[in-house]
Image (cartoon, rainbow over all chains, first blue to last red; front, side, top):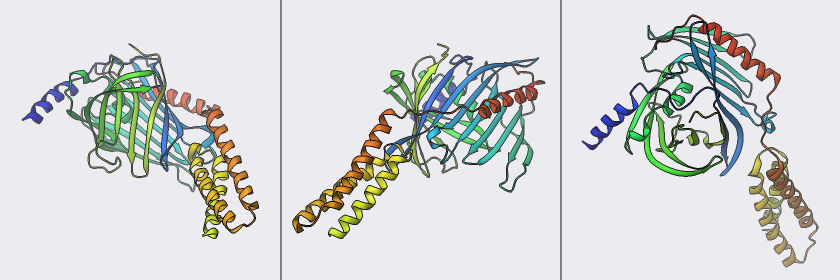
Length: 259
Length: 109
């Protein structure tokens, strides 16, 4: 019974069409990604999350840009230069275009999703660059649910939820389109926690995340995300555990905040 | 036992020197600690037998060098990302292409 009531409250809070009031255009968050090597955390890459306004002749959208780049000292060993973009409606953060352009140690891949919200479809383009040379394109039209988003817009969407109304222990799931598959990502509110960050001591919402039907993320409550418990709900710290090891993401700076 | 300590000390020192030069951050401190430990054990064994300690001196020199390099790098080396012209151009081009793709869309709201 308790779980049922919790679910009802959480669903009413989390599945509502959250309006964007946590971030605006010109926000820039910089993180350091570290990987656990033999028990010692080693800084590997810089992750940047940036928002900007873009205009077409008919609409104004937000460009949500996420970049992951290895620190220059690593570039001669294993260079990562990933660019993820989502072009969303500024009011409800629903995506209209998603682009993923990755280059990880020479492995290149390009993915593009053009959303047709009215028809509930996505035109996908998957471009690979075989080692022999040339380009290999795969085009598909996929049917998606009305609440399906990409990974970038999901992170921003999460910030817009009324987490302060949700009880501890409650959880919800989001459908994310990744590699042409709809994947369910589950979040569970573990409570509030005050942590030290580069931005100072911050009271945060501690969320556990998991992926349904996938063993990418390991452990129970081992993949955690801390969002500041204020109006901006900035992700300040994240811990992850995957098959090949564990690591964390720590915020270095936050500029252009809306609130 | 002395052969074992000698082997482990040499391996640890060589590993310390390699890792202190490579960009593995504080990872070099693990073999440094092991190198100190095995070198001291080797020193103890050598003194017990009254044998020459020249190799141990060389090992300690290696430890000092790798420790100095590791400490210097952990304090003074800053993590930086190089924004190449290629990266900047890629992002700019990506936005231009996106705007073309989005030209005909109408927002639901």
